[in-house]
Image 1: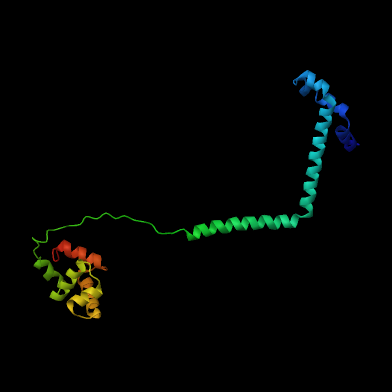
Image 2: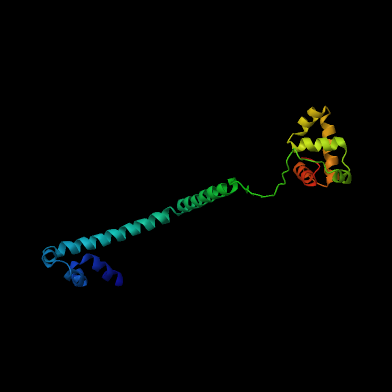
Length: 183
């Protein structure tokens, strides 16, 4: 019974007249009185069309629910894949700027600190290799300049590192400059 009453609202334009009388009062009276019935029919048809489209949409969703779920899952995984690819391909390098005070001495007034040289126990050849390291030469270039093999230069490097208690060339050069054994 209630379903029939609800459907009669959509069919009967006379009921709409009483329902929309408050809204109609604010419109220009000449236009409304002239087109009252067509306006009510238009509104009822629009509501009926909306109801039919909503029912059609529900039926489409019910008939094709599997395809809709597969499509939704595909979209979710596509977005997730793009996000993950962007996260994994982002470079993880950080630029760290280290400010360090460097002691610079004039090359003309350089005097060798023999006390520090004796205390470290560096040989003349090791001191020569350390000076060439300070000039920025590679092991191969040092070997060519001193007319020795590459392995000999590497041996001198390891002994220098051991005697100066450092792990890198830059640390050895820095310590040698601080101690005054290289210019």
